[in-house]
Every structure is written in C-alpha cells, then in structure tokens.
Image: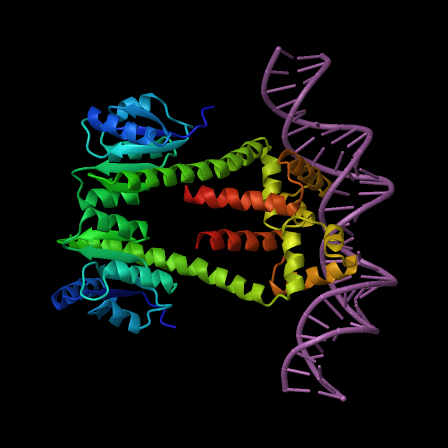
Length: 207
Length: 207
DNA sequence: TAACGCATTAGGGTTTACCCTTAGTGGGCG
DNA sequence: CGCCCACTAAGGGTAAACCCTAATGCGTTA
C-alpha cells in the first residue's frame, strides 16, 4: 500500500501544475499532477494518503463537482481549493461541502505549504483512527445475527438474565453468545466493548 | 429561562435591521436587534436559543471579531454572516471559524429564511445534547478525587482487584468507592458509566 | 450424504461484582 | 471540642459473570 503522503494536483493549466508541483517538491513532498478531474478519478486515488490541490474552474468537471464525486465514492482526501477567479458563493459552497481550505491566486507560497502540511497531517490522523474503526467493523461483521443481538443488549447495559428473557432463550445460551462476542471482537473487558460500539455508532451517524 | 428561539440581528444600518426583523417576523420568528457588536454582547445572550444574523463589516467590533468573542465566551449560537461587500478571504475565515453560513447581499428572502430555520434547528439539537452533557459534568464534579481516580480505572476496564493493587488500597475500599461512583453519577450499569465518559471525553477533546 | 457452521441448551466450578452493616482515622469548621 | 466528610477497611451474604466441557437439532454446502 502506498502510504506515503502525496500531493495530488488537478488543474487544467500545465504551467500552474508545474509551478505547484515544483513548489511542493521543494520541501520534499511527493506530487502527482492531473490535467482534469476525470483523469484524476481514472487514476483511482482511493486509499492514497495526502491531500488534493484542486482548481475550482476547469473545462469538463469542475472542482466542486469533483469534490462531490469524491464524497460520493467515499474517497476521503483533504481538498484545498485554489482559484484565481472565485466568488464568495463558490468559496462558501466549497467549505460547507467540507473543503479543507480555499485559497485565492495569487497565493503566498509559504502559506500554501503550511496549509498543505496541515492537510496532510489531518489526513494522517483521519486515516489512523479510520483504520481502527475499519478493524472494529471487520470484527463486527464476523458476528452471527444472534451474537450481534446479544451484543447490543449487553452494550445497552442489560444483565444476562434480562437478555435471556428478552430474547426468550436460556441464561446459559446468553452466556455462550456473550463469550463468543467478546472473543470475536477481541474485547478484553465490558468497557472495551462499550467503547467500541459508542465510537462506531457516533461516527456512523456523522458520516 | 427564555428557551424560545430568537433571531438576533446585529447590523449598524438601521434600515437593514428593520428589514431583516420584518422578514423574520413575517414567518413568526421572534427577533432582537442590535446596532453594534458591543451592544449585543452587553445584552448577555448567553444561554439564549436561536441564531445570529451578523453583518461582517461594522464600525467598532467587526462581525468576525464578534464571532471570535462569542467563541471565547463559550456562547454557542449559530452565526449567519450577511454582507454586501465581502471578499473570498473573509468568507473563508468566517466559515473556518465555524460560521453556520455566509450570505451575500442582495439575498433571496426565502433562502435566508430557510437558512435561519436550519440554524435554529441546529441550535436546538446542540442544546438538547449539551444539556445532557452538562448534567453529567455536574455529577462528575461531585466525585471526590479518590472516587474519580477509581472511576477512571473502572472505565478503562480494570477489575477491582487490579484497581486495588494499582492504588495500593484494599479490595473493600475499591468496592466502596466504586459503589459511591455509580450512585453519585446515577449510572445504572457499567455500560452506562462507560458511555457517559466516552461522550464527555470525545466532546472535551473537540471543544 | 456427510461435514460444517450456527443456535441452542446444560452442568460444575471459579471469580467477580454488588449489597448491607460497621468502624477506625485524619482534616476542616462552627 | 464536637461534627461532617473523605478515605480506609472488614465480614458476610447474594447475585452475576466467566471458564471449560459437552451435547442436540437444523439448515447449507462441499
């Protein structure tokens, strides 16, 4: 997996791409440039770490449309918009759609580099916590329907006795399911189990 | 407590204030107008529900400065900026500082009303969950230092035996502290206790 | 059809948590 | 000084959770 941070550059103007790419490489950042949104999407950047420098006004798919498409495809990459002819509504829409920043040309080189570094760091943290959540989701997927049912009641704070009467099964059955839940989820304690679930559900509701 | 949603209007232009106020009242919204940021702050809007329509360019304290001051004072009110002479950096700064929206004059009446309704609804939900968190914080404050210490270990998943050796006290003492923790926090189960803590800590880290 | 995974039940034993009562010590306060 | 509170600790009992083993029925799949 290419986990090295990459600064993706999408701009229809070759001079701009080269300029940005040069600037990024001057501080040791790895870059990949694309002349259009569709070229970028074709390169399937899913799973790649880093950030995206995106021109907002381009022939074909616009920057805002590409941002929407990335959202659609669950490709989480911090997007820094760069535009020379931007108006306020554009900037507002971009930021409300989750853009990391919105920078006007001409820009200050150092400010852009700082912004890129923050975006990359943000992406890194996002991926770190995301990886943990993915692992939990994978483990959760290995539970049988019955086990998941028992788990939910356990997390809600129900005692085994309550769970057994709720599900209409014996106490011993609940104990068996519960033990398998703890084992499959690699939860070493009840609090661990509850924390997993709370964090999974809270992020599930947001995203 | 005045829990009715109020649309606060802060603009140095009386004509604009009247116009906005009239528009809001036309759909039954309660309004309060202020000619400057400081007048608004003097009215101590802390705890009031609703949203804030804020002109970005005013004599004295600017809209952006007022937004910062509200943040400083922990006054959480969705801010909708309204400006006739805004540039992109202003809008970017406002939104990155947490503004609910940023609207340019001249604006479409219906769009602004929709925005205000969304802001009020957002504020309502924020307050609902905030009230629960405040109650938990209050209960947490009633714990003695030792009780809090025990609670943290319990939440981390440590068994009483482990806690007793960690703190260097007897098992019985831990049981006593633990029982008082559950009682004071009105936690009816271990999962309840863990959920409280996770939610409190996750929001503590963000805000 | 045989093997497998799944859900279910069960016994027996160990460990842990929970509940109630009692009680000693040290600190701060009226 | 006496009182309240935090912290400590104990005994003793009940309930719940945890661990290991074992068995049955029921679908699906190899």
